[in-house]
Length: 340
Image (tube, rainbow, N blue to C red; front, side):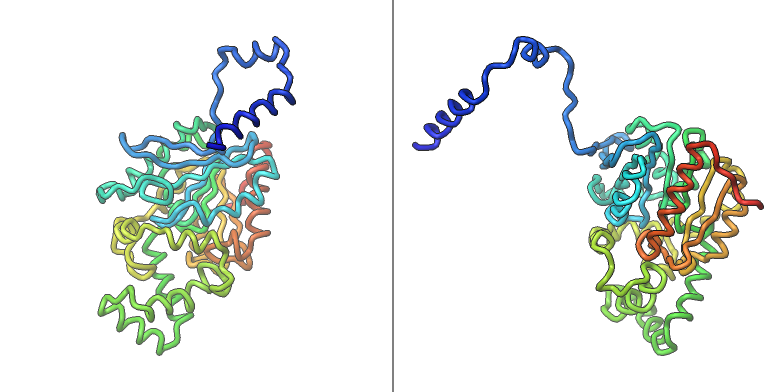
């Protein structure tokens, strides 16, 4: 009973303290100019004819960068550190959760989880965001996706960043085997291989070895308790169905759609100015990333000296300094490629 009375008094109080606006203001408010509803930069884009993928614009600037996250099956969350570096440099960027990931639709149709369809999805997202003459940054699996996208649609791209990704799965698997011997003790290898034979991939022992012995050396070179919150959040939100179907159960078992993927012979066809950005301690072979840079005809390569697969965290200053320099060089027309 008291609530309507309170609202009435409040309305009268506001009316007494807000005199009527001049006629000119009233005319402006009643004009036919459409008002664009603000969404904090968030936008859903239709892909594959019927699904929605989530995007978000961050910052404003003439340099516009579309981020392709890794996984496969992860989300944009772990890339939130970009907010602390790009906008203040006048660089506008876009998050985008690939179909099946994060804030986007997650259909049960497993036929959707393949590289060619994801390439077309990126093109649909580009069109939906109205991007052209833009920059694309792909990290990890996103780097693989960026290579495939550039091979087909590079005419729309002003500059590309291939972050922490090599150009072939055969070398990736071979290097993972080397890392296993490097960071696992003989006892660790015995336990790991035994669990592997039993396919006990969800066992605490199996995951403890991966997380504490391997991932803290080649994924993010920090103790697990110090891993950044956005990185943990991305791990917790991962779509394991996509990961297993496209890659496999882990780094040592590439049994999915990635098996046999090799892009080395196509690198020469990418003429777009490109930055190959990685880490000396990456789970990707640093020598393979250097080779990737040599085969790209218009590229620059930088490996963060203290960085691993998440160089944007464990060698943050070097990662973003070189990324921003590249973007500004290309935009200013002063980019020079490494000598091949």
